[in-house]
Length: 436
Image (cartoon, one colour):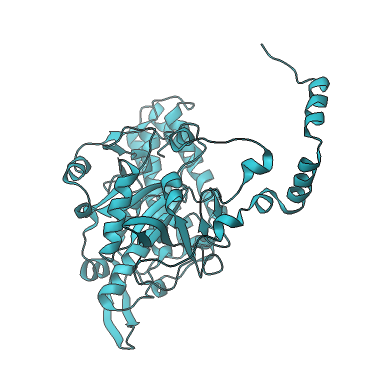
């Protein structure tokens, strides 16, 4: 039975609220905001930036006003490998290059989805999931390696960042509106029984998308000259090559040796899940997560860092975080104490109620072990040098437990039983699943 909120009840709430303690809190938070008023310096003061294990890294990158973190983190892993092998720690790859192709590939896969689901009503949940975000910024590890394997790598100087790459919202808006319009055209053609005409029209639409992307991001180079100075000051000019040849000849293509470990307590553990709706390249690497206990993620991550290899990971970066200081720590904000409430959702409950999920990808580059146990982790972010310690963040181990969801590690650091699962068949989840 519906019940109206009465003024009598409001007066009771007011009487209970109006005391000196609450009015002091009100003045503090209304002036400086809830986060500043509840900031727990006792927590931040206990966190230093000394780590027992660190992979040597240097300058950070900056994704600016874009959601390309997954691509930046993936390229960070590769540039650290390149730095170690060729002694050039600040060599960077072009994110703009791969993001260009990602726009085109995602447009292609979106239009394919539209044709494949054209027999379903427009308000079908899957159709609506596709239409809600035809081409977005966000992505996964497998999406990055699909692009790298197909299109190779360019040094950042061979395809520099464009305005639209650094500020993606405006272009994405125009592109997505065009995609939705195209979707309606294709659905009508299929409904009329002319799928061949729909496929031909799709090719016309993709030519338009290419034109849009090229104008906004600039066409990637087919060839470039690899030129750099190593950390010893030695000059290298390795001549002209294609982006595909650069990847093939300078990197070991061991990307299939990596597994995305996920920690989702609301799903069955030690099971492989697929997210086909997040695939960005037809016939590329399918997006798959091996869901397992958080201790497995930590153990594998520590082993990989001990081997001198950095790690792509995904987390809910907005929770219990101080962006400017570069701190991720539970209890960093005493908001329950400020409001006089008790919020104790656990990780499983946060996933089930959509209170939390993976929102950002970064790179693990260090860990501090005390008596063999991790206490904190060093993070290379992609938000430039004006946040954190020159762009580096620190994450407490307890925050890892609560808000880290996935790490990308090599199979050699996993138990054989999990390797076997990772190589088996996956159970697909829906676009609205908490893992998405």
